[in-house]
Figure 1 (cartoon, rainbow, N blue to C red):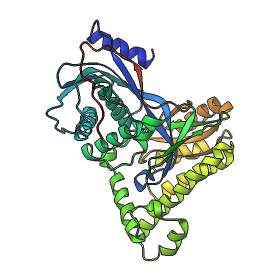
Figure 2 (figure 1 turned 60 degrees about the vertical axis):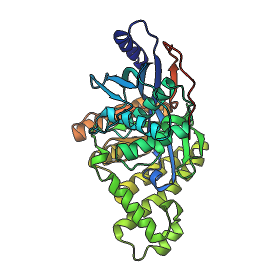
Figure 3 (figure 1 turned 30 degrees about the horizontal axis):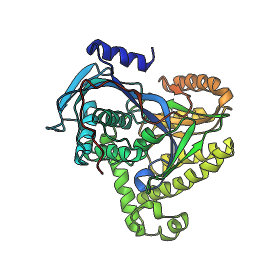
Figure 4 (figure 1 turned 90 degrees about the horizontal axis):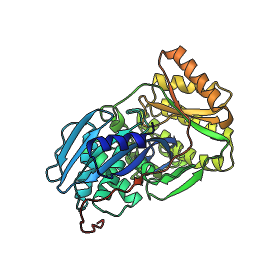
Length: 394
């Protein structure tokens, strides 16, 4: 049964004789441009088929009541009394409500069910998908105007200030603005973006190592602080403004660790921009080389890979169907991404799964779908009573 049917049935069991609103927001895989978003650089993610779905109806009060089918538990809170209580799944919804109300939006309560098939902690951004799905639900319930970029900014504020993870805006933008069949080339400083069509003869396969991490409890925030310290050495506000020439000229005197962090960010920005013509011209060999270089940089200079990630990347690279692979996401566990000839995806998947099982004893999950669509209203429900139109305030 599809997630759309599952969540519709679950809603119907709890709320008879009601037509729900249904919204969805996808996970994402970042093709290249890792740890560059919070350095105001360039990224190239694409949405994946896996997503978070919410089916809901509007309430007459300011209570929010959600049943998570994934965790088989119900949580609730009042929009008039938002308090952070841990780091569970409901805190992402609370954080979104807090960010929207801090932006002077008037919210209406709602109740419903939530379901997702994005592996949690895998590096495919289940958290951003949850935030954007909840934000879309609040927007529909409260009859707010939907703006992709502004929605991503609100979700990012929830992630940064409510959840305490100092990430950049890539995940949220991918969840709102992605387009079928394309990668999203995003300038994280200006938030301008363009769509890069993925050639039909190549597929970006997601390789889930089966290992997990909790970003709030990892060295993720430390990496951001190290990048900020390196930027101060170069006299700029962000490593986005450091070129390879400036890096070579002004690196003397910089702490060795900070130099390696800066070198990754500077060269990774170049790799993102080099990936664009490689995809546009269908140059799978060049695109694969850029993926391999990115992984080496993340492993050696930024030090965010893991033994499992290194292992599955190496195995992928041994397949004749693959021209390049790298870890994807924040690192410390989770997933890798590999560029594979579309005609050989099934053979490649079997090869990697078997070799990885023999080498690690772990089961790898491999997703090889086409680039997906950003957040959407799948079904428009019926309000049980009239309410005044509520416009977004920036």
